[in-house]
Length: 175
Image (cartoon, rainbow, N blue to C red; front, side):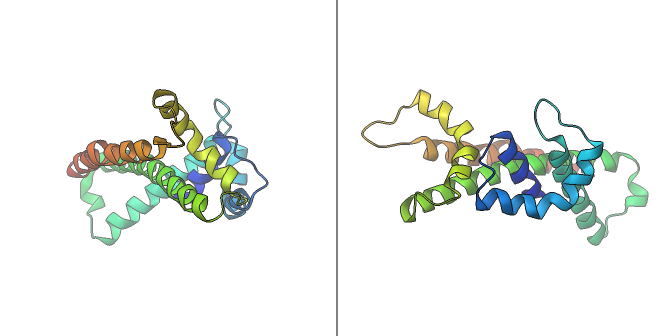
């Protein structure tokens, strides 16, 4: 569910077209939770904070349930466990954001081979454009060869391996 909330957040943040099957499906899936939370949590800096908060809360619940089912002694852990779970949840939201970008890049590449004019192409373009445009400014497209997707995927995977994985290990060692 966190992935659906994050997808809604990024579709809104990147001003993806609302009238396409992807955006409509995400809105339909997430409206049950976003509409009530939006009444309490206002937007911040033109970003929908309620969907981001819901992604965090679902990750927090997931982390709690996983620890609970594995027999973690919450009663003995003290209050610091909640900060650890919150940190781990925030890290997982960031990692899911990178995963979401990678899924969008792969879907965009596959659809460009099969049907580049599919109705969800504008939404995928909107999701990947904020990362691809700076890369394209540094390494322009030459002879029809665009390396921005390859560089972005490598950078995203490097971020996950070098930053997120050690941070997750460090956080889980705290409890």
